[in-house]
Length: 188
Image 1: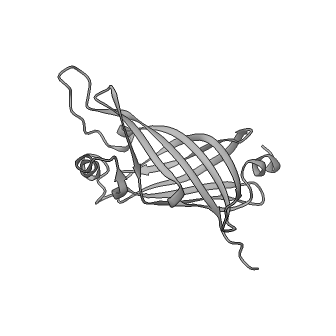
Image 2: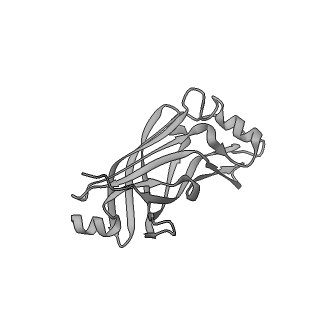
Image 3: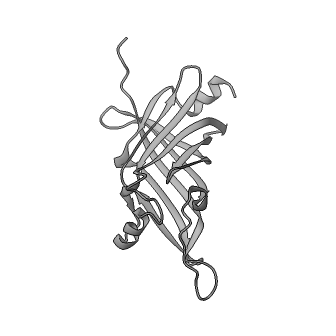
């Protein structure tokens, strides 16, 4: 892919995630029939687009900021049975490749570290648009989705159900809705 094609999708600059206008969410099957959704409330990250078209994306999530809307469940998710947030307080992401795949669509491959284990993850999505906000900040919005196995990250806690199956599904769907802000230009 040419530099021009990459820059048409992602403009040059460092784009910082604006947590107050972004969501990092997930969903997982409960009892193999229902879906539990949650999000993380504290995170930061950036997408850096160089003049030569090289793109890097990074992110850090505070594991203790998990919120599924149920306090007891959230406490269990922070425990050693799942995230073990006292031992592993951060979930991190570091891209290894970012490629436009047609139109405004992107494919981001990178290393996701959860619970002390690092595995490759693929996020696919699109650039939703860009423009100046009422305060003069240049913004860029992205929507990305992926899926991971929680067992790949050492999170194997579960309970068997009397009717067969298990309480918590293995596949976790990831949904990122990101509003980013262009970093101020540095004076030379």
